[in-house]
Length: 467
Image 1 (tube, rainbow, N blue to C red):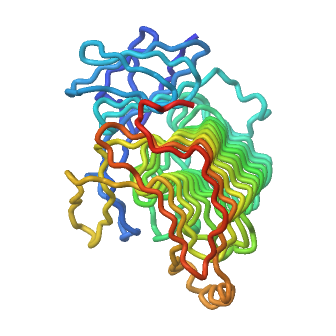
Image 2: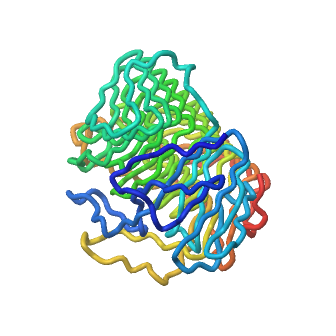
C-alpha cells in the first residue's frame, strides 16, 4: 500500500521537480526556505522575501518499499539523497533520477546543490488511537484557526490533509497531545517584538510551565520566530515531527528552555537559525536542564548551530543530556556546540553516532549589518566548525532589563564549569572540494573545562558515510 495525501499550501505546488511515486505522478507541496545565510537581530520588520526561495515537500504513507522517479528542468551534474548514511543511490535517468526508499524516515533529494531540493517524509500507516478520543479535530482541508489555546487533557488531532493556519499555545497545562499527519502553518502570525521568550509572538508551538506534552506526526511550517518552544516544561516527547519551510528571522527549530525529561526523536528539522538548542534564561534560573534525549533525527541548519547548548546558560546545571544517531545533513557555523554564556555547570553530555555532512558549495554566514546591506558571501569559501566548546559572555538586554540587578547578584563569584563531555562515533563527512571543518576548545578563565573524551571522532570523505 502506497498513499500520497494531498496537502494544500499558500505557496501552491512545487513545480521545480516532477515527481513520480510508485508509478503515479505526484505534485509536491511548495514551501519557502532561506536562500542564503544572511541574518540579523530583529530589526523591527520581517526578513524580506527576496532572501528566500521556494522548495517543496511531500509525505508518503507506505508499508512497502517505494520507487521514486524525479525530473527537473534545470541542468544538473549530479543528484544526491540525504542523509548519506542511509545509502540511497540516485541513479541518472534522462532528465532526472530514480531511487528506492526502503525504510520509514526523512529524506532530502538535491539536484546539484541545496537550492533544488525536495523533502520527502516516508511514514508508516498510523491511526494515533493511543491518544484516545480527540477533544478537537481539524479535518482535511484549510482552517484559519488563529491562536489555539490548549487546556488540561486536550487531544488536538490534525487529520491527514489538514492545513491549519494558526499557533498552539499552552501555559500551566498538563497532559496535552497534538498529533496527526496534518500541517500547522504559522504564516499568518505577525512578529511584534525583538525577543522570542515572551508570548507576544508564539511560533508554531509554545508551552510554558507545562507537563506531560506529546507532539506527534505533525508538520510545522512558516513560523514567525522559534518554531517549537518549551519553557520550564517537564515530561515532553516530540516524535516524528517535520519542521520545514522556515526562512524568517530567528527561526530556531526546537528551543528547550530550563526544561527537563524531554525527548525529541524520529524527526526532521530544517531551521533558519539554531536547529535544536538548550537554553537557560533568568526568569527560570532555578530550574535545571536535565534528562534530555535527542535521537534518530535528520537536521538541516541554515544559520548558526545545529546541536547547541547555550548561548544562554542561566541555570544551576545541564546534565544527563544525550544526542544519539542523528544526521546533520547541512551545517552552517557550528555542527556541535557547547557555548557557555553564563554560570551553569554543564556536565554528563554525550554525543554518539552523529554524522555531520559538509558540502563544497555552502555559503559563509554574514550578519546584515547595517540592515539593508548586501550579502557578499558568493564565491567565498566557507570554513565551518565541526565541534566547539567555548565561553562567551552573554549580554542579557531586552526583554529582561528589570532583572539586571538580580542577574548581577546571581552571577557574582560564579563561573561556568564544563566537564564529562563524551564524543563517540562522531564523523564529519566531506564532499569533494570541501574545506575541512575545525574542532575548537576555547574556554577562558574563570570558567573551567574538565574531562572531554573523544572516541572514534573522524573527519573523512563523504563516501565513508555509514550508520
